[in-house]
Amino acid sequence: MTTLTEPVFRGQLLRRAYGSGNRTVYAVHNATATVWPGDRIAVTGASGSGKSTLLHLMAGLETPTSGNRSWPGLGRSPDRDPASIGVAFQAPSLLSPLNVVENVELPMLLKSYRRGRHASGRSPPWSTCM
Image 1 (tube, rainbow, N blue to C red):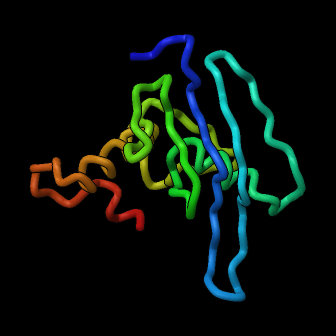
Image 2 (image 1 turned 90 degrees about the vertical axis):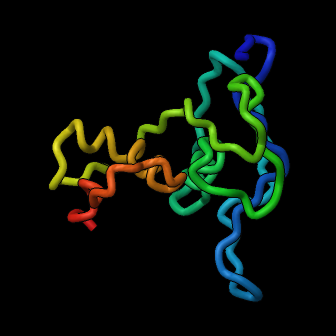
């Protein structure tokens, strides 16, 4: 249950690494943040400094390499994605072969196919776009 006494997001010592060994690059390194209902936040920094990666970690779009994150105000456990979070991307992210409704439906369809819940047996409508 959502209450105003719990943070919407809590992340502790979040890291997101790409590569391995001596080629490891940390896009996010030991970030800690708490976001409360009604907060307005700004993530600023130079190009390539990890701003988008941090937002992706906060929204549940990417999994941290290490660290803990939770969405207590959303009633979500750390191992589940926060289905009620919306993200507005800075770059266009629509697929031009799809109409507006199909572009909006796409994430929901992907989620249902990924979890094996789609029983129509048809090819997904977005399969021709990839």
